[in-house]
Length: 103
Length: 200
Image (cartoon, rainbow over all chains, first blue to last red; front, side):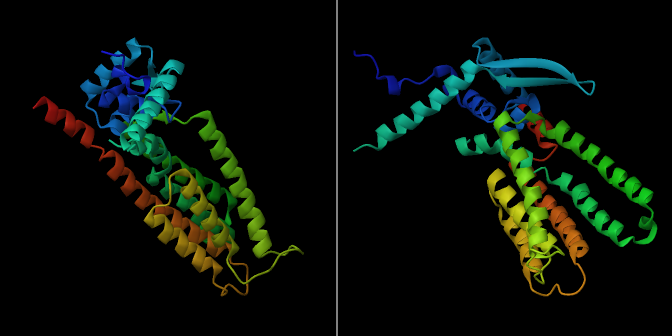
């Protein structure tokens, strides 16, 4: 069986809908906190937490736990690697869409 | 969830926190009342006190948005664009007002409400660039632009009336922005409710 073409290979870590949503939101900001990500993606607390852990383990996001006005706050930033990979992933999805539309 | 919605979530958050427009609009109206020296506002210190009270009213509003909808930091590029837009906006409001109607020798001295016209234009451009014009922006800011551009503002300088009109428009636009914000991100209680549904 031949190797799949490069443009057909999707990043499995990023392609999961929840993680794709998280990274897409983070790509449009410098950083965002947990509550904003929950609102923007519609994920539950547990789901979001689980996805963020996976993304952090893969080096795609950096998580900072801090206090803001004496209240705990979890702040999330997309790393340079994360920014590169989400951009590449969307480019591949666009390429796939173009291929699918070719006669 | 659509890519466009995810990518515009940050812009929606930044531009549609409409409750913050209520104290902002009140400041416009206070400025007009101060210029007219209405009642206690004939004393400058009273203006300062009331302005401070109005500004302080923004604090619980900020807290409400931060607590229920979170926080984000725009990118450097977004902040630079915002700063440039604000600088250009101020220049347009000041310069445009003077061009349309002022005592300057180069003024066109038209019978329009320059404050209302220039402010409406800036708001329409700001919303169009920042988050895309919504129907209520077109109606509210379009109405202010139209009202200000009508050639009926003869006689004394109508800038203060323009400030009052702008203040009312800011507050109205803010209320509709907030409604759209809540439709986009959910009600304040909706996060807790969804957690309860999951646990059930």
